[in-house]
Length: 581
Image (cartoon, rainbow, N blue to C red):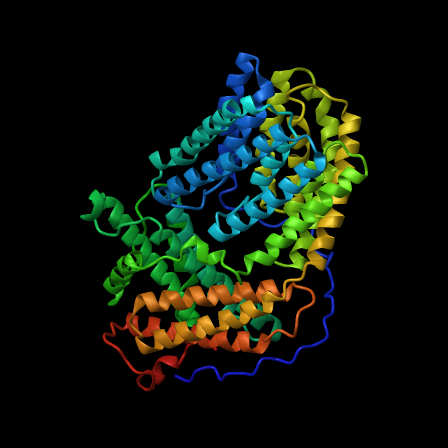
C-alpha cells in the first residue's frame, strides 16, 4: 500500500478572524436517546435528601445536599462497572470543590479574592473534566456549585457538617445512578452498539447516493460519524472489564452477552469498511433488537475471524492506559482552554463587581459555561446562553408566585425545572437554559424568599457581562496549538496506519488506527473554528483520513476472509479494490 506523501508545513498566512455564525445557532436538534435517564436521576437524587430536609425544617441546607445530588447527572453513557468508579470520582471531585469554596468563604469576605479563587477553580474543573472525558454536563455543574458556595456566608466550624451533607447527597446520587443495573445490566453497552449499527447504516445509505459534490460531503460526514460511533462502542465494551468467564468470577451469561455485542460491532465496522456490501436494513434491525432486555440479536452468518476479534479485546484490556498526568503535561491542548476559562471567569466576576452587582458568581458561571473546543463554538454557546437566560428570567417571573406559596411549592418547582432542563438541553443548550435559569434563581430562595424583580435584574446584567467578557477572553487568549495538534494527529494516524499495514489481521492495531482517525477529525474540527491560526493542512487531513479508512477496509476484508499471519504491504494491494476512496 502506498503511504500518504509527506507535505511540507504550509506557509503562515496573516492572522485573520473568522466569521462568527448566527444561522442555526438556536435551531433545536434531535434529543439524546437517553435524555430521560439523567432527567429522572437528578429528580430522584434531589428529592430524597431535599424532602428529608423539608420534613426537618432545614431547607436552608439544600445547597449542600444538592451539590452531591447533582452528581447523578454524570456517567449515564458508561457501563455499570465503569460507572461505579466514575461516579465515585465525580462525588469526590464535587466534595473537593465544595471544600475549597467553603474554607475560602470562611476565611475571607473579600469579593475580589473570592472571584479569583472561583476563576481558578473553574479552570481546574474544566481541565480535569476534559482530561477525564467524563462527558456532559462536564465542568458546568462543578463550577455552578463551587461558585455559589464561595459567596455563601460561612463559618469555619460549619464546614465539616456542610461537607457531610454534600457527601450524603453524593451517596444518594451514586445509588440512583447504579440502580438501573438491577434491571438492565448491559444497557449502556447495548445502546452504544445500537448507535454504531445505526451510524453504519446511515453511512451505507449516504455512500450509495454519493454522486454529487454535496452528496460526497454528506457521505464524508456520515463516515466520520460512523467511525466515531464504532470507536465509542468498542470503548464501551472494553470498559466492561474482563472478557473471560473464568476471570474474576465473571458470570458466563454476562460474558456471552458482551461477545454477542462485540459481534454486532464487528458488523458495523465491516459496513464502515465496505458500505457498498452492507445491508442497512439488517443493521437497523439489529439495532432495534437491542432495545429492552431481550436476547442480543445474532447475525445469521459467522465471520471466520470473529474469534480473533474477541481475543483482540482481551489483549487490549491487558494493554497500558495513558495516565491522567500525561494529558495535563505541558504542551497539552487542554491548557489554552484552561487559561481562557480562568481569564474569562475572572474578567466576568470583576466586571460584575465593578457594576455593583451583589452576585458576581452568576457572571463567573456564565463565562465558565461558554468555553468549548474553539472560538466559534464558544461564540455559539454564548448566543445560546444569553437567549436561554433571557427567556428563563421571564419563566421565573411566571413561576415565582407559585414557588413563593411555601417551601413545598418551592421544592416542587425546582424538581420540575431540573427535569425540564435535562429533557431539553440535548436538543439545544438554550432550551435547557430556559429551565436552568429559573431553577438557579429559586435555589437562592431556600434560605429566604426575595423580591423577583431584584433577582431578575441582577441575573440579566450578570448574564450579559459574563457572556460579553467570556467571549472576549476566548478571542484574546489565542490557541495557536490547535494547528500543532493537527500535525501531531496526522503523525499518529500515519504511525497507526503503518502498524496496521504491517500486520493486517491484528485487531488491536486496527482499533488503534480507528481511534487515531477519530482524534484527527476532532483536532481538525477544533482548529477549524479557532481565530488567529496559520493555514490549516486541510488537504493532508483529507488524504490521511481516506488512506486510513482504506487501510481499515483492507484489514476488515482480510479478516472477514479468515486471513492469518502477517502480510507485507505489496501482498495486499488487491484488498484495496472496492475500498472507499
